[in-house]
Image (cartoon, helix red, strand yellow):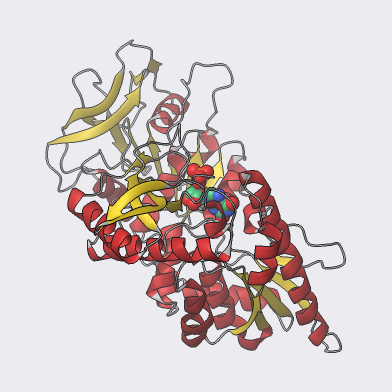
Length: 517
Ligand code: XMP
């Protein structure tokens, strides 16, 4: 792999993704692990990420010089560039000349390894206070900016390279080409990794892990659990049983997509538990958001637990018991929890955390090396239906937290119809990939007066909450074109008689959350 050493900013994961976009497999490691540990992974190349620190600060992450003379090609970016300069006997100065944001860089060597074939002037994304002063022996300077004479350097003989800026950020115009030049020309790596051709490898390793044992998977209808299940199915076929708890809080068509389309496409053995009545009964009259979430979470675990017992029980006297539980853990979770091997913590929102002690499974996490966009590619490769592969995020508690007020069957039916119209129109307008998600919220306890034909109406408002986001941590309200909003509004008020008003939520996050409850 290409190893990205994380010097503690937000950039390392992004770098790893860019490397993979260049069709080279990459992993992130924290800077706290030793050079020996890094080299033990037999890296094809090493990338040193940016970081928040100055090399002068107390406790600034240190670069072990052993990484630089192991014969492995190294590319330092921003902090990584400075740490490299310092470790190799150059100097890093506090010039006081800070550069932040888009900056014009002049490439002095367009025949160099990193900049081959690129324009002499390019916009790069800078974020630094210190600058490299004296260049280490054997290096030549290949780029500069107005306030930073040494903005890039390289030493082809030792295959060491660095830039002061952030090539992984899209604002750096030539960033991906700089990175690819390093990987291909500098490190001599052949691009051959794609999420598609990694399927065979993943399938192989699942087979090794599981052997002849049986596997259980909780299918939610979301991208992650569906692709994870499809992979395990490809690997061990009918050793896998999936359980789908239909809690009645899904959107129109979603249960059918899991029960019919997904099963047809993948051939998984699926147990459907129709628990709609049970959830509705437990939720009756409950209006407080946290109480709703708790009830839904608890009911889910109890229903899944019973289904798991049934599956385990029906294979009780076989030689190969149900030993494994599939989790849709993704690579960012693995990196954020320290990147260790072995079972990661079960994320509470996966809803299968609180199983009782006598129902213990070992976890199998087939997606733990993949980013979300790669999971989608793998899903397509496996023939998972596109409606599932491209599904936008949808909360575990489902429509239960999009009805403001108590949840009942009638209100769910109203919200389902309004939501289906909104989704339909956004899709028709080609906006699905631009919008992170668009919750539709029913203000079930609010009524307002309207007029339709010659009649006064007294109906409910629904709220459209389209948001743009990178990761759901922060979000902005999405600027959906007026015509599309008008069409959604007209159709909802015409087709859903109980709704006589459509309103738009124009709040960013923070201060608002994406969901209303
Ligand atoms: P908020 O409303 O906190 O939502 O801004 C952030 C993202 O998380 C989703 N969400 C959930 N996902 N279980 C989930 O699996 C939950 O309980 C849950 N609550 C919110 C939400 O849809 C958004 O994408």
